[in-house]
Image (cartoon, rainbow, N blue to C red; front, top):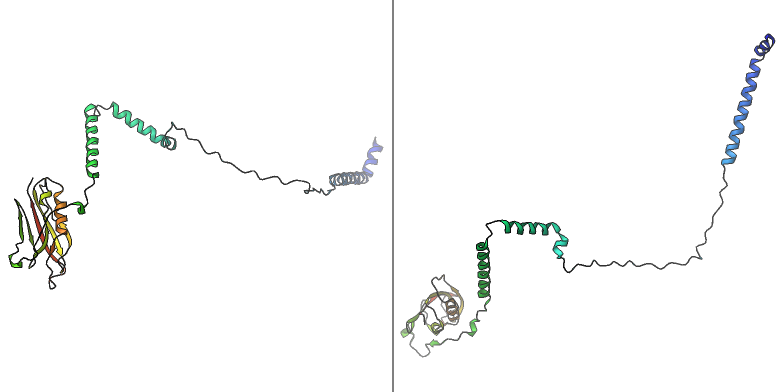
Length: 243
């Protein structure tokens, strides 16, 4: 045993060197094998597209959404609005304020609005459809022509400084109601009424009186006067008596 220990101590460095050499050699062999096995030879892959036929393009067809005829479009677009309206209607039915008297008043108000709309939608005859007699002063002495014309209990009075009428339409026969209508007029030097405008009027029972007066004023002709203002402003008053 002592002999073996002595031999070990005398040759320990040689033994260690031999072992280290073999270990390094073994590791080198392992690394070489891994490198060789890890290398893979790449081969070229060739794909021939000439034999593949071109596929036709598939058109996309969008199917329109079918609407249910029994479903209101507004409810589909905004279901919350439909629910809100339903809630309001339910609340109105439960609220004692919305009783039969309330519903009756609503119905009467709607009827009144309908009647008013019908009345307003009635076509008013055009002014050219109104026919009325006219008074002319042809051949009369201008100094004897009065600016007030009577027709029964009705009268027409105009105020146009230093001018007299040549043709004066009389609309009083058209009226069914009574009242006084005054019209502002603007007259050219040639005697033609180029503009007419109604003055404010009240307590007129016949709504057509302003139309009759306005038409008559526009159709009135005065004498020509070259040195008169252009235009010259005046008024014509029509007093209608109910027929």
